[in-house]
Length: 174
Image 1 (spheres, rainbow, N blue to C red):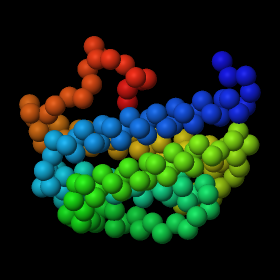
Image 2 (image 1 turned 135 degrees about the vertical axis):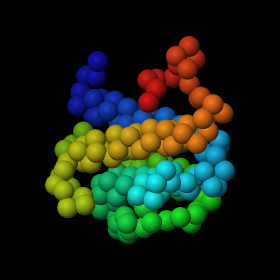
Image 3 (image 1 turned 120 degrees about the horizontal axis):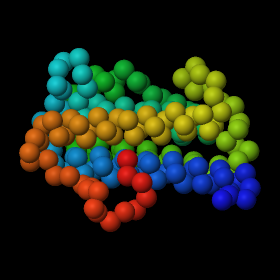
């Protein structure tokens, strides 16, 4: 059990980082099974492709966990995340995602218990730093599951599972 608020805050941050790391691993696993056409495939014209979802994850994570917390300039163009079509190749998407997860992890590692309680205004919402993280990390996990579903939908029986209940365990899977 944590003995202080800093111990508790570090435990919460470690859990957030674990969720991001697990999600990144799952997305990498999906991308390794897809070609460029599949990455940008939309089930219908109104729905997003995996490529759109990855761009959206980058924008959201940067806005909420980096710029929103540190006060850095936020240049996000949210609508363009959903309009993009074949604008990035698989390796570019993966690199962007890895960079954003790394930056968010660095910001999280720098936070103290007091920092987590500080107020921020992000995307017009008044939240604490902890509130920003509890928004963006589950958001990231949720879209990860969409990416897994879209990958399975396209691959069908050829989909290769990454984890099974009898596999070696490294923390709780997403």
